[in-house]
Each structure stands twice: as structure tokens, then as C-alpha cells.
Image (cartoon, rainbow over all chains, first blue to last red; front, side, top):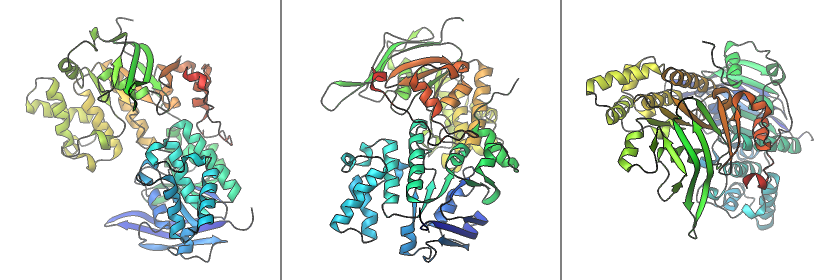
Amino acid sequence: MSGREAGLSLHRLRVVFGDFVAVDDLSVELVPGESFGIVGESGSGKSTVLRAICGLVPLAAGRVRLTGAADASAPGSKTFRRQVQMVFQDPYASLHPRQTVDRLLAEPLAIHGIDQGDEREARIERALDEVGLGQGLRFRYPHQLSGGQRQRIAIARALILEPQLLLLDEPTSALDASVQAEVLNLLEALRERRGLSFLMVSHDLAVVTHLCQRLMVMQRGRAVEFVAAADLAVGQVRDEYTRSLMQASAGFRRKAA
Amino acid sequence: MNEPLLEVENLRVAYPGREGGFTEVVRGVSFMLGRERLGIVGESGSGKSQTGRAILGLTAPGGRVRADRLHFAGLDLLAITARQRRDLRGGRIAMVLQDPKFSLNPVMPIGEQIVETLRAHRRVSRRAARERALEALAAVQIDDPERVYALHAHEVSGGMGQRAMIAMMLIAEPELLIADEPTSALDVTVQLQVLAILDKLVAERGMGLIFISHDLRLVSSFCDRVLVMYAGRVVEEVAATELQRARHPYTQGLLNCLPQLGSARHPLPTLDRRPEWAL
């Protein structure tokens, strides 16, 4: 790993939909090379934060900035989009059903003008190798792949532009427990190999603490707690809401009658 | 234990393949169910949902269901008429599906769907049915039943929708409830609330429950007994309390692959699926 890692600075973000404030006064600093998690229930605004970073929803106030090696690129610019890529929750919905894997992976290359013969071939082959899929899947359609394979394709598509920061929106929650382990291992290996920074959203505390060093707990659009994964693992949390999330992830317990 | 509620012996479900011939997706599943909570666990494609659907008679058209014995409370499910089968469904046997976004009717208020279910199975007046529906909504801990009664599926959250779904499934007071991934589409905190409601109602009414899920830990914390399925077969049956002593490597694999708070394992152990398990 060299000094190529990108960090991210979110300063007082605010996102509104009509009268509804989805994200309110949220500030986060991501150290270059860090893996950072956002936890919260549905509607807490955690996915909206990711969408606001990559420009899928407009900001009402606040500033998004890349730091570290990539600090020159302004949000929304082509270089920013090359450095920041997103993986969505549901691989059944995020891959175009009528495009082959080859076409899906070639799309970002075409957008960024890297579609000349040899480079295109080499990048697609490398992306498939990196996510542990064989070249044999290259001309299949998404419906011919399993859920785990589809999510690997979605990760390959995000990696093909060689970004420095990956935004992961519940990357494993549509997958079986056994497949989830494989995808988590893949993400971890990729991060190590490429020196990526992660910003990952999940409602599953165990998944986030597995992959991230630090995390933020969100409730109703606000950050209620920042905690290191190691502290959370031993139960050192301050906020009541964080504690209830911890209990929830421990599984169902029958109340004594 | 008295007479079992459900007897399944050598259940086989098959679907036609492209070149004629049938592919079996459930290959000889046998179990008995009393008034207890049984979990069925396996990965996608293991045949767990197909087992549940075959019991209800909801196998997709073209599918072939065979069994040496498929009896519900003394009734031979494979011999009765389609009409009798329909009367059972939603009445004495009910099913809760994974995602309320898809299992609720999008163009009918939630309350009316509950009334419809009740009136399909019990002779009650419209007014009494409405009362019962409101009670059912209150029983699944919905604070303002009157308001929710008039809402459509898209106007409620996932947890609320799933509670309404449970209310609907329980209104005809079934003897057997099949819950197919009832909480997988929900947040962890909401999952627990929904499970607690389900657990309470099952216990109070003395129903049999089949809980289908891919999450072995969740199932074992909820059920008395767990069947572990792989490639259409039951590879192991364990009592939920004995889970740590499960012998089959597939069961152990399913248990170990989940990340856990407080025990860092990098990388996570993954399942090493062996072809001989499918034999």
C-alpha cells in the first residue's frame, strides 16, 4: 500500500425530501484507507448519506470532499466518480436484466473512455478474476447467476474503474448466511490488496463490526454515537439505542413467563 | 404426545426440465409435527420453501408433488379435492411469507384484506368481521388499529406490514402456521418484535409452527427442533438446545459462517460444499 488511499470528509450534511429531513447536520471524517460503518434501522437516513455522497440525491446543505491522495476531485466531476464507486443492496435489482456480464462490466469503461480493445479486455478479465469468478460467466445474463455470483459482479463493476473509495449499501443483506461469509471475505481481501477505503451501511451490527474499524450509529437522520468496532465488540457503548441494536443482533430470546 | 398434526413421509417435489424429464427439488423429506415449533433451515435452493409450499398445495403449476404420506390432522392432503384443499388454506393451515410488500394486496386496504380472509373461512357478519379484524391488529401490537385498518400496503413500514400479515394469517385461528422467512425483509430490531409477537400467539393458541429460514442461529433460538436441509434432503435433525453438538459438517458450517459480535475471525470460515452431502 502506498499513499494512494483516499479519505472522505463530510461536513454538516443535510438532505431533505419535501418537509422531511432525512439527514440532519451530519459530519464524518474518514481517514485514508479506513473502513467505516454506518448502522441504523430503516428510515434512519443511512443509505441516503451514501446516495448524497455520490450525487444520487441533492444536498440541501453541507459539503462532501475527498481527502488524501484524491483530494483534488470535486464531487460530481468525472474524476470523483472514478474514485468513488457504489455497490447496492440487491444484486437482483442493480444489474440490468438484459445485459450480459460482459456488457455490464464494459459500461463504466465506455463512460470513462477506457473502451479501447486491449485495455477493455484486460480490465474485464482482471475484474472477474479479482472477485473469484471464472471467465466462463462472462457472457451469461444476471438471471443465469446465483445471488452470490450477482453480488460479485456488482462488486466487479464497482472495481473496474479502480476506485479508491467504495460505498457499500447493505452489500450482503440480500444473501444467504453462507454466501454472506464469502462476500465479506472477498471485500476484506480486496480492501487489503488494493488499499481501498470503505464506507459501509448495514443494519446488522455483527457484519459492520466484522468489516469496519469504526462505526457511526444513526437514528432519525442524526448520528447518535461514534464507536470503535473493538469497543463495541466488548460492549463499551454509551447510547441506549446502540445497546438495543446490540441486543437485537444477539438473536431472539424468549422472555421468562 | 397425542396424534401428530402433520405427517410427512418421503415427500418429493419435482419440476419439468427443458428436455422433458423432471428435476427433483425436494427429495424424500420425512417428518412429523405436533403442536410444537419446528425450524427448517438451509441455503437458497435447498428445497425448504418448496417443502412448505407442498404442504399448503401451493407448488407452482407444472410441479409434481409425491409422497408416501402427507396427512394433516388425519386428512390425506394428496387425496382430497382442490376445493377441500382451498378450505384448509388460510383456514386451518396458514402461511406467512417473506416480504409484506409483495404478499399484501396493493390495491385493497389492509383491514379489508383481513376481513376477506376471515369471511372466506367463517360465517360472520361484516360488522363482526370488522371488529375481529381490529382485535387482530391490536393483538399484533399495532397501536392504532382503526388507522391501520384503512391504510394500503405501500403506506405502512415493513414491520407494520408483516404484523398485519400475521394478523391476517391468524384470524381464522389455524392449527398450523407455516412461516417462510417471516423476518428476513425486516430490520434487526423489528425482527425481534415480530418474532416475539409470533412466539406469544403460537404459544397462547397452541398452534403448530413450521419456521423456514436460512438463519440457523435465529431459528434455533426460536424453535424446539430444527431440520437442516441440503440439496432437497434433510441432512440432520437436531434439538435446538443441542445445536452446538450438531454433527453434520454442513450444519456446523452454517453455524460458523456468521460474523459475531465480540469474536473476530478473519477471514470468516466459509462452507466447503461437498458433493457427497447431496447423495
